[in-house]
Image (cartoon, rainbow, N blue to C red; front, top):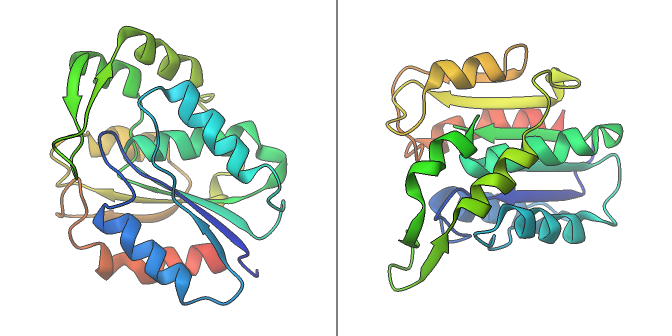
Amino acid sequence: MALTHLLYLHGFRSSPASAKARRMAAWAAGRAGLTFACPQLPPSPREAMALVAGIVAGWSATGSAVIGSSLGGFYATSLAEQTAHRGWRVAVLNPAVDPARDLSRHIGTLTAWHDPGLKFDFTAQHVAELAALTPPPRLTKPLRYYALIAKGDELLDWREMLARYAGCDGEVLEGSDHGLTDFEDHLPGLEKHLLA
């Protein structure tokens, strides 16, 4: 498949400045004719998904793909399941499975990882928006998904991720961490899925 468009969605409190986002931007820049987008997502999940919908509105049904890390993996799954008729390739990196549950403990004023001077409010309304975005328990066409899951993830339960993305392409790492500091080592498998 000729990959024409690639969307990268970062995680909670993260940004396009994350190591994985920058690595995928560099990867995309080396591929002629590939449009790459990695927006800064607002704290509101509803606003984040509206932003994403606007970006991908004109993208083709074939040749497009989305990658999401952590909360971005949840967003990528939600987007893919809402637009299942398009058949996009999807890759999730240590994806959040139930962020409404997990992030309900983080309501309050927070700082961004890559810019500690940037503060934002995360509210109960945002948690409700996450709950509303929860995709159905069964994925349509699991083989279009690639899940990179680290057993060493210190924030999310790898078993929950594995159960959620059962039947998908991908790799379960014995160690690593939530941020996938060894991401470069696993890029070939991800690239193979995106270009299949």
